[in-house]
Length: 100
Image 1 (cartoon, rainbow, N blue to C red):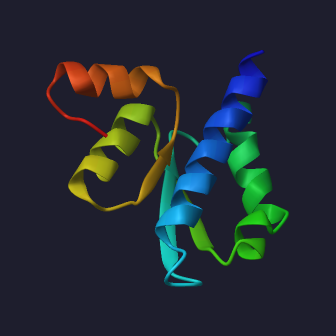
Image 2 (spheres, rainbow, N blue to C red):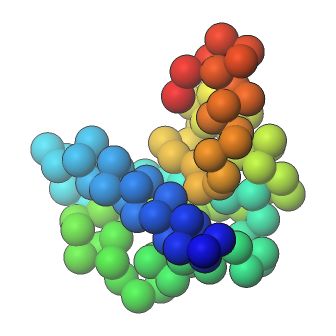
Image 3 (cartoon, rainbow, N blue to C red):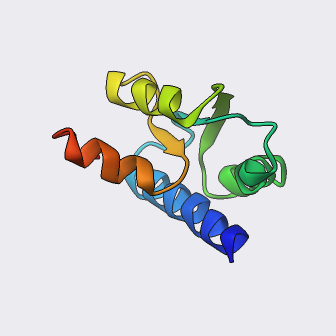
């Protein structure tokens, strides 16, 4: 069940990024994860390595931070266009008046 949610989250990010970059094929996009070596982020890495981003005309670079909170900060600062993580981060940010 947890893996299914993670795949759904990665798919949601990929679809959102695909929709945002339709006009500019092969635009460089950066997605950050809270620890790329963690098994929970395997769907993001597989999507990249199996070429699914490229199949959609996306040039995606996956970066890693030690924790999801660090990835959130990078997103809020505009340093990355997307973050792969758990939904609870967005709820926490909303409570702080930051909607993403």
